[in-house]
Length: 143
Image 1 (cartoon, helix red, strand yellow):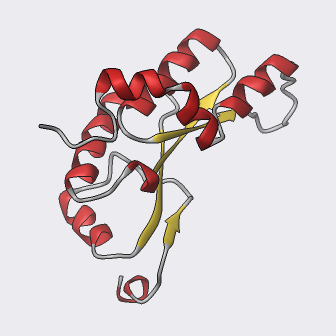
Image 2 (cartoon, rainbow, N blue to C red):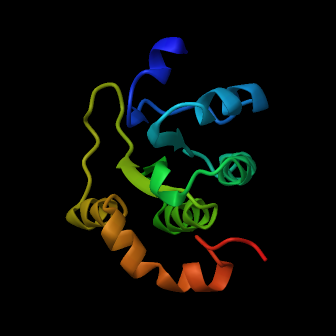
Image 3 (cartoon, rainbow, N blue to C red):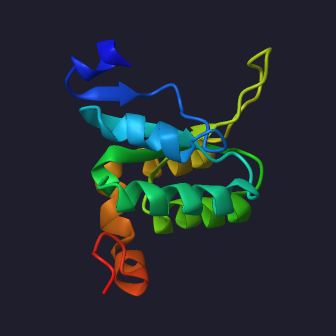
């Protein structure tokens, strides 16, 4: 940890495990110069834990511009869209990734690739989801 404290603009792009982010680890992370924290939410069951972690991170002073979340997609467009919106509502910037297998032989149609692209560009996500920000008061301090 001492080595990390000397570094600036640290990005944890490998994906932090939301189930292992304890209060002590959060304090350690808070003491660093963080540019980006990346998490993953590949299953609908992970949303609740992501919400809990998001609340802790926001309380610790992190902003949406620090928090990103990989979201595995490619099986059910409706469920994937719902999960991407839920991740966005938690305060994380979703980053869609198409599901791959070990053989890398899954073929995705052009529409799936466009869907993934729309959900992997922060500016596009922000512009399309302004209604979510308004409805859920995202990015504003709670009153």
